[in-house]
Image (cartoon, rainbow, N blue to C red; front, side, top):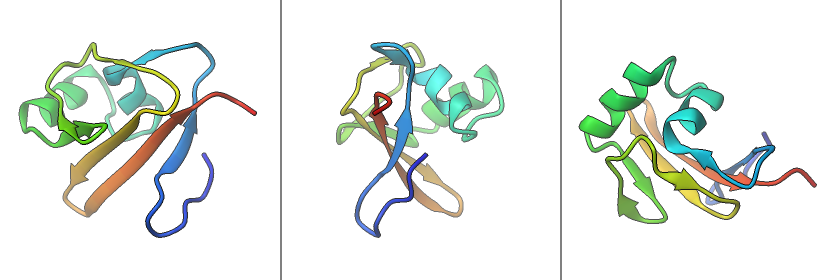
Length: 83
């Protein structure tokens, strides 16, 4: 993951053309497992591209920005392909 500037999201590289949101949350360490991802979604703590998301199976593609409202603050992550 690349280090972001204060207003920019952290880039998270994926290998394929898309990744499901639940997998993405586990990849980034935000959720330990599928149950943890489901809990975040149930709590309405996740936005994708500025819109609230409740589907763990939501497909994410390069360029999508995921914001997660955590107890220690909001994390902004951007899906990218390896350079």
